[in-house]
Image (cartoon, rainbow, N blue to C red; front, side):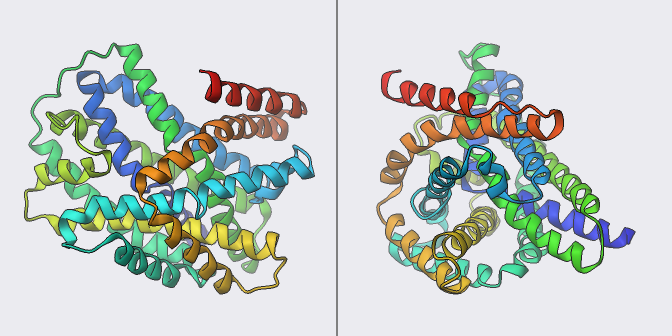
Length: 386
């Protein structure tokens, strides 16, 4: 039994980490360190709150609701829950997050793959996504045993060499408080609370089936899930700290560079021009792990919630990836413009819902709807008037 839990805890932790760690997680910390320079320690403090602590709380809340995001949202009422889930699915599905991953992947590795156009890259990348996702029960093993180790090894090579040859951080005009706020904002834009809720729901349900099949209890499931989440977020924290400092050390004169290219440029400075394969592996593994998770979540939503099991999971997955291919070719700038109002209006309410649901489960705090409603109104007002 001990070996069973140890195996599942580590594998699940690595799987959750790889789901969280997508293209934006490569880009945002380096950009943050570049901006914060010698104030990076304060920027990291803000980043860890919104990009590590909040996702961990999201994971805890889903564990408390037994791995069901439907139960998590249903505290708002059935109709508001359905609307909220729909909008969240728009963010993480083929309208925003999935095409953003495809386009960012293409931009990040374009210097290393030659003259491959975005449409061709999209078809290849999404074809591999289909192969990695269509057997949903194998996603945990794929992420935990294959993708996470490849991602961590490639990142470790970049980080170790980067710190070995690091000299001084760049100077900045930011104050400590300004750097802290910059870190808070950067972590907010990773959208990892969404990942904690929807990714973890998929992983935890797979884990729950494995534990049930081995005749273990619900409390064993909860503890295994919590330990796995702690492993995932601890790895995230260490990598965010390291990548932020690499931005501070190697980000000189890169302020005007495209954000999608900053990881590749900084990594090339660290490893040299002949290390393309390591950089490409880091980018592709980060992006691939996240899009596999997103594809699984959205396809299951289409299959079970929208179409009531009238189609199979592979058919729903194919339709999801087809929509993603169409929106991906709108280009990164169009996708970011489209996603901005959805994120700014809905994401604060999701954070509040996460905190209130934890309060409900642990301390029986039942008030919810008025707080969510006020948060939503403030988000709408903030977007249109501030």
